[in-house]
Length: 414
Image 1 (cartoon, helix red, strand yellow):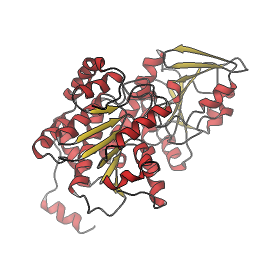
Image 2 (cartoon, helix red, strand yellow; image 1 turned 90 degrees about the horizontal axis):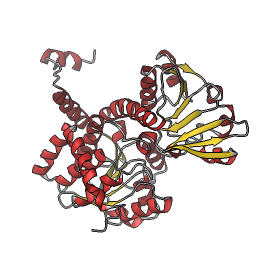
Image 3 (cartoon, helix red, strand yellow; image 1 turned 90 degrees about the vertical axis):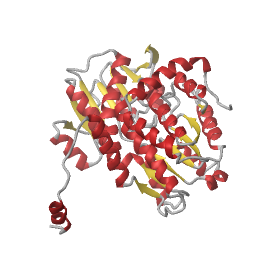
């Protein structure tokens, strides 16, 4: 095979990780059984760029069980787990990824994956789609459609669609209720603090946590911080979300006012320049900054490096920068996704729902190939509800159903 990975000898460790995920992802296991019977992807090629850890690996196995030829890479230079990549190669899948890629290596891996004339694109952040629309436009003719996993990728897709530049339909997986209500809120909320806690080995209780952005991810991060005993400050640019944060019991203020107060700073906006050069000198000695947005542009680490009079690696994944005023500012995981670059990502049960949406959305694209006119597609309601009902079943829960009289009443529009 043409795989490019760190070391195939790491496969045994990766296989154990995947097996643990498999035991805790009943939704994907159920879909896998369906796919094995129906083979919806027979003869089709799928290019996948998602944070390459054990949950993603199991999604790849599920898609392969449906007959797909899989071509896999990571979606962040620091989120690939080399043993998981090796495990997938040992199972006969093609992988181009390793932990700690340079920008050039990362782009080369994306190009190698897309060189296989793929029909379905599964993206996390938009790098596959962007490459197809720029340097590999000759590969566009093979694409039926794709699925986008995260908020940042959807922002990029909407910008392309507004300019009439998007050449094929993309399912907005992140906007599905069974994705963002759980993955973004509960998944990000827990995994961000898993990454921070394992990296710093510091207490959260009694600290001041500044959460930049109060979307679903920010809500989850703030909620978990509050649950661990922190005082939480939210910074926002959206007045409605700012009011929501106030009513949820949090302080709200601009970053310029929050900078001198925070012990931990967590950015979750999907935007750039959220913690800027002018904020660092205002911070207390020992302030810790990290990012949970997709790209490493939310905390201006480049400016911090230039401002520092001394740098030192304090612990694995913690770089310290001493400023002229004597204060040390600490950056976790180079300002990249702290929950993946310094952790294992979202819990398996959460990604079970998100990746179930991915798998069924990919199937939807195949079943409706040639009949989809829109370029930006909401996850079909039947897919969202099917995942929700399956999840309830595995949780051992039942819900009410409308009676014929209730259906008739509601149909009146009263």
